[in-house]
Image 1 (tube, rainbow, N blue to C red):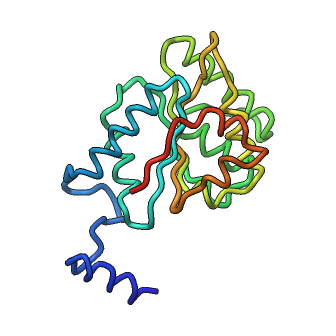
Image 2: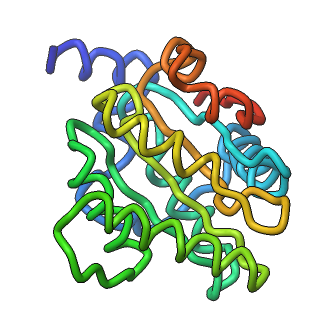
Length: 194
């Protein structure tokens, strides 16, 4: 597998992996695909439906593009970026609440979900519709996916209380359009492939 990866980079004229995974990039290069992804993310966050799928193979720049996009958002906009890979319900809720800086008093997933819902409604009522970025959608457990559906259904004053960008390493249309995922499927604005 490692040699295949090196060969792919060499085929593209590269001698090493183009995206450093060990921290913030020293330089962010604006290129056509990145600009198209940025426009897609802007449309998702402005859409009343407000859920988009971003997918692409490993090392395609998904995380870098998301970090750069989030950096350009208003400082007071609540943003949570979590990896959903192999997290159970309680772990996913803990990760989301931590990212939104929600202090949970209880270890109960039910209480953590209620506190998260209250936070999202309160922020939306104040004119700040939160953004939740979930990485590794294709590696999530069904119980954690149900939490995303529950969050997708939350409304405040007739508007959805959270926008979502669901990121995966491969197209996840089969997940999004599964019968149990109707709350997500109904709101999915579009998909973008890197």
